[in-house]
Length: 113
Image (cartoon, rainbow, N blue to C red; front, side, top):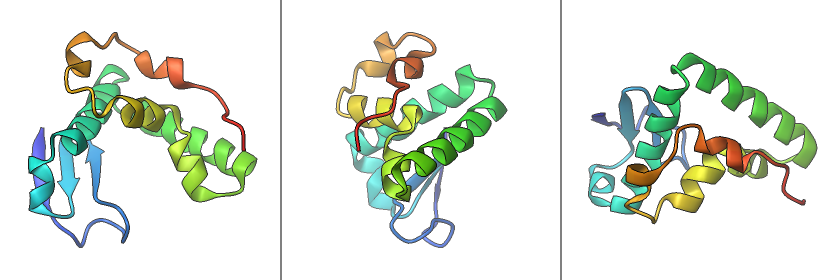
């Protein structure tokens, strides 16, 4: 993992993004937040196990499908399977030690509106 601190790369409202092998943070203080960093590390693991490029293709396709379903970009984003796994497990700091490969598949579903 390579950390980059740059508030100008990220769109307003975003605190960080993981793009293998980088984690880009808006503020240096975020690297001291274990829950936030665990969220981003989960994304790095997802990307790695999918050989990187397929992760982004599926992420985008899932966002588009869920945006069409929800009609709301934020709800679409929060319901992407990769995000669902990361948000639900971010506080579990031992998660990556016990996580099984392709665990994000367990989070594939359309939640109610």
